[in-house]
Image (cartoon, helix red, strand yellow):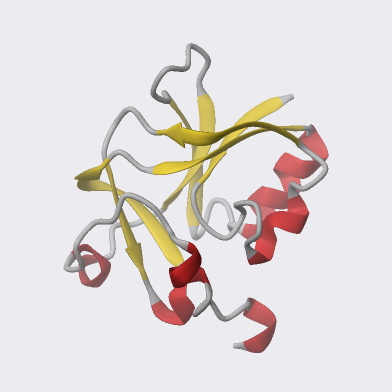
Length: 130
């Protein structure tokens, strides 16, 4: 089993949550220990980059191998995102997180956010509609 931290469209009530809805929810109030730059791109897609920002708020799940593979497909690992192990606040065990493969200067011009909100997600356009 794998611990996975989600911060965007995989969160409960969001468009891609169906991929992890059968997984075990460990926390709805998880946060990264280290800061990241979270911004919103085209189609209201959240992008997490390894750049100065804030600790990111999200959810922590326990997923099986099959689910982890589906998440890698969704995030287009390794061409679009990388999956890396990180430390979360108040957690002893590491968790996987998805971060953008290459820094995007345009996205880095936006202020960094602490989370991807329901209001942000209401504007999200699924891949099937782009």
